[in-house]
Length: 187
Image (cartoon, rainbow, N blue to C red):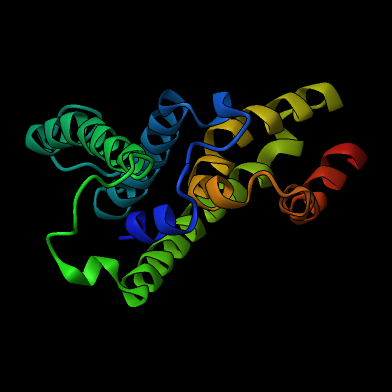
């Protein structure tokens, strides 16, 4: 929904630098971790610890287990393919004219914002437990960096593709994460 307008603004749109941060494998792992956590949360709601009689496969009915076992990676692969399709320059006119309108891009931005909110809540949950899980500063900083690679940066890929070369963008990311960094360093 954003692809055509983004390529109009930035004809040579490419993955942001440093490109290793935005490799499809990182995005796939990020999406897979996020979907596994989300599926686990939903399963906990509908299948609490008191599993029904005869349930197998981690307390889930076999059909649900196999649906999650195969479905979550399939959705992660599909999502990764769609995201990286964004960086290919469109070669022909849009089939649906609505895809070329500013309103379509605004709706896409809304979807991206909601997606980023989900990732941000997951990120906040992980960072909340970071100081209790790791006693040393080095361990906390290493885990912060690792989780930033897999959870914080991938949903910002579209925004960093257009604004990643601006130092103010990276400064704002640093400022937004400064409370977490201060907590990691001081505790």
